[in-house]
Amino acid sequence: MRSTQLRRLRRAIGAAALVGVAATAWLGLVVTPPAEFFGNLVRLLYVHPSMAWVAFLAFGVTTLASALYLWRRTRRPAWDLLAAASAEVGVVFTGLTLVTGSIWGRPTWGVWWTWDALLTATAVLFLLYLGYLALRRVPMSEERRGVRSAVWALIAFVDVPIINQSVYWWRTLHQRPSLSIGPTNAVEVHGIMAVALAVSFVSFTLTWVWMVWVRFDLARRQRALEQLELAHAIAERLESVEAGS
Amino acid sequence: MLRVAVAVWRKDLSIEWRSRVLLNQVVPVTLVIVVLFGFGLDARTTLLRAALPGLYWVSVFFALTLAVARAAAIEGEANAGELLRLLDITPSGVYLGKVLAVATWGLGIEAVAAASAAILFNAALVDPLLLSGVAVVADVGVSAVGVVLAQLATGERASESLLPLLTLPVVSPVLLAAAKAWQAGLARTPSLAFPWVEILLAFSCIYLVVGMLVYGIVLEG
Amino acid sequence: MNGYVVAGYLAVAVGLGGYWLWLGLLARRLRRRERELGVREGHDGSLA
Image: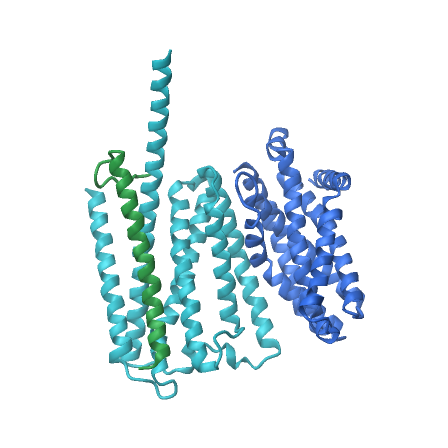
């Protein structure tokens, strides 16, 4: 059957993601050497950028799925559920991007938070998608929730370049731009370090795929269950009406 | 479409004129916030003057969120979305009218807040042309996106805190740009305000277009 | 080992692990309700 094959594929992705993340930790913490300038801190390089990449990927998929839902020709409940699943996992990864970025910032810049352009934009993005999840939690009919959250996702997406441009000007017009250099620009990546970095990107992306898939599947089953419950309730009601007459 | 817009604008203004919710509640709230900033910063006028652009725009933004919620509430009371659909009125015209109405109230809020901040913080509002131009464009931008968001976040069982959660992060670049432009104006360096005015104009234009495109979809959904 | 590095890796582990646990909890609750309603095992609620 197709569905059992799909489930096997999903399980394989999950297993690969788990192995990959374990390998990332092993490569990052044990195998790779400390860097010349950053010392052991460079090990954070194997988690932070891949978190950020997955976060942006997740919101990109949310936007795409929302647009497909809004367009009448391609409107399927599945797009709405996919957008929601991707946004939820994306919020987790964005949160981790901020936390790991902050942990990187403390020893390198001496503060837990700098109003660095990229960091600030990521924080606003995090807030935008918290709003998305909050909007989805408001009880309303399925189609209305789908349309409204899709519209919100598009509005948020349009906002991203504007936010980027404004915080970029904000933090670079009057301040020396050295703060806006992320960890990647200051470290020479070579050999085993490049391998660790690549493993980290691949395995966290796989983790994202697996999580979105599982979350999507759960939402789909939840939806089917709710429809079933509704049908049961209507049937019961009809029975009681018939018994009464 | 413009005829519809003007009609909706006049309707909203006259409803508001009769109920006076904004005049009796939102404008005083703005005043309260400005006074509270004075308390919070220990009434040190040098500090308040230095922070004036930020304080001013934060208080205006809170008040504007209330005004936006009010505009959506007017529509909700009459269940007007349904009616507009039955009458086959262009949604983009309705949208423009609501944006105009909110922006008109916003100008009033901004004027009151600016006057009270200038008096209470003992600050001279130099370069009034630049400051008011920035205020108008920022006002239109916030109204343009706020009217759509209010339509998303109201009705049924949405709580009041949802609308600020949706609106404030989206308009954060407007806050940043407006505050920076005001800073430049107050510091008598108006040329520094140009990139920020650009951002404000871009934001307003983009969201006016987006709003006109999606408002109808939101109403029917 | 650097304390910041440990904290960073730990944060990722806690974040992703926490979400994973939450997904598991969600799945368990869903399966229980499915069983109560007599949905057959392995039904994926396909969307028409």
